[in-house]
Amino acid sequence: MGEDLYRKGKKPYVEVSEADGKTDEEAAKEAWNKHLLRNESIMTDLFHGQFKGTVCCSQCDRVSVTFDPMMTLSLPIPKPKRKKTFFFLPYKIGAKYVNTSYTINVGESDNMRTLRGTMKETYGLDAGSFVVSTVFNNSFSRLHASSANLLEVTDEQGATLLYEIDPSLNPTMPS
Image: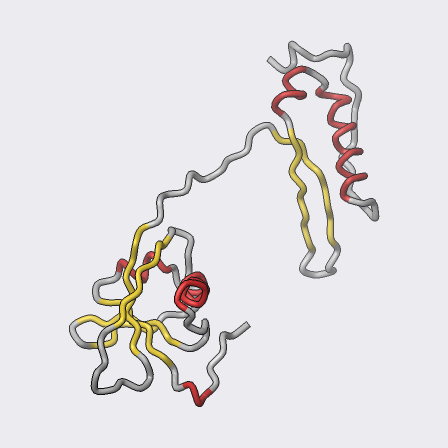
């Protein structure tokens, strides 16, 4: 349909260009104008846009920036977050200790860093002050890395426990 609605008679040949020292705004405008030379129609006006593509060569470190036309954009439909419970065990447990549990909403792309940030913002627990593990049948089944997917961790069989690290060790989050 876009071809039928083309506003000009003949489509000229146009070479794709790179940004090469131009600002993003200048390069995008130049690429868009070249795109319009071959695709000027009501369809282009209403449904076309641009992606910025950046490619870096791992051998020579050359960076290539292009602005490419697009007509569709695929976006994931996020699933609703689920409430998950975590248990916190302090480093020193006194005689009157009572289990402390925290409930947070967990999404499918959340990881341990998300958990640590949420625990700090919501409950005031320092992000690097605890390790995260899964315990099943009174045994550790796994210690979790910062990159572990939080939903997968909480779906494992057993309880997810946050163990406080000895504060005298001055624990911090790795960068």
